[in-house]
Amino acid sequence: MKHFTLLVLSFAFIISCGGKKKESAAPLSPPASPAAPVAPSEPVTSIIVSPHKPNIKAVNGTVQLTAAVFPLLKADKEVTWSTSDPSKATVSNTGLVTAKANGGVFITATSVSDKTKSASSALTIGAAVESVSLNHASVELKPGATLQFAHTILPSNAANQEVNYSVPGDNASIAAIDDKGLLTAKSEGTVNVLAMSKFDNDKYAICLVRIVK
Image (cartoon, rainbow, N blue to C red; front, side, top):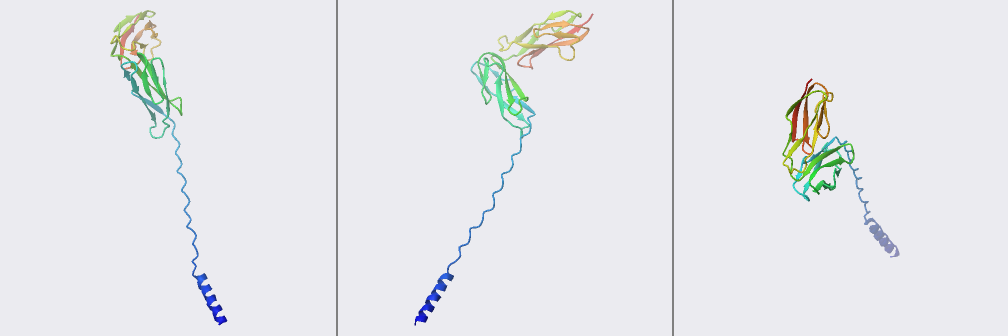
């Protein structure tokens, strides 16, 4: 009987041990894929500010400027904004311009990554220039003579009454003109005198000048 009891206990122990299942190890997760490298931006080639020639009718008015940086898809788009005359207009770091006084001012966007790349918008505050005229349409001068030009901008209440005088082309040996409109004839030839609105290069006047002995 004693042997029988030991046999039964041994058998029960064997069944008990054999019935336990081995716990399987958790499957390993695949390694995470490395992040795709960020392509470096290409050098800035140019900037365009829009609108190019905005007009704000009254003091405290605003206009939103935008800067397109090229190449459009690959260049660093960050720019800084500045004004040529804070007493006439201020500009925020997002390109929002606020008029402070009547007149003209240049608002410039400059690339942060390449400060040699910039573009400007010519802003007028008040009435916009409609036309430019000169006191001469054509003249004839002798070498050594001088002639004072005068310009008229309409309307008379236009915010900016300034023009830039020039003798276009490679004509420095024939005639020269200063920033006040004083022309000096130097040698025989024919030139044009150009008076262009300082803040709107679509508005200008031309005088034909013949220099003869």
